[in-house]
Image (tube, rainbow, N blue to C red; front, side, top):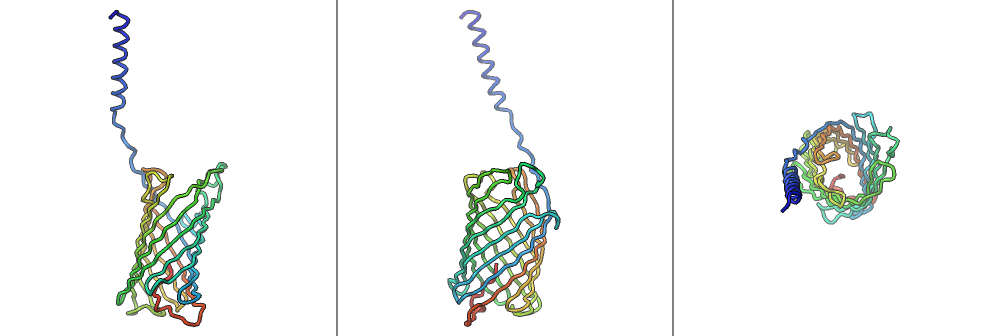
Length: 266
């Protein structure tokens, strides 16, 4: 081996060693970043029974962020509910929310972006002597896009489970003029080609009080804490939200059996 070949061989060995040395350098992942925000959510829930089996279901929401300063969402949910048996309802329908961009002054984003969803739900009631316990399983197929102008819609799937407890405070049972404690926790899991790391999308916990005005109207208000992913594997958000909701139930047929269904508006 002549001198030139020896130098080339030594150079090749040095290059390979340098590549392996660089690849073995440990990469420190970014630290978890947690931000906090506040908001106010106003909701109107409806459930109108056409007969003992079928009902129209609707939800209409206005959601604000940064307290009550900035618009966040207008949220419209429609569905048809079928009572399978005394303590089980199923619902299918469509959802049409509108999202306001947080950086609306950016010329490259659309200030308001719509979404299109299909949804299915099952609500199971587990009544006890003095409290009510409900299990809600909801599935959604969401066509959504980014705020950047021209962004395509992508299909994702979301699975939600909520457990709700109602406890009467001023009466032994739920009737007119009953003040009650309302508690729930809801877990959100999402899936789809565009979902890479944030499969556990959100967790929401609520504590509040409600009041049965009469057979048709109920009002609830309270505090909701949300902990969710925000934009990257290392970014999370804590949301502190005040919720105020009005519920309207009405039977549109003569044979009224609301107490036998025992499924509330959710």
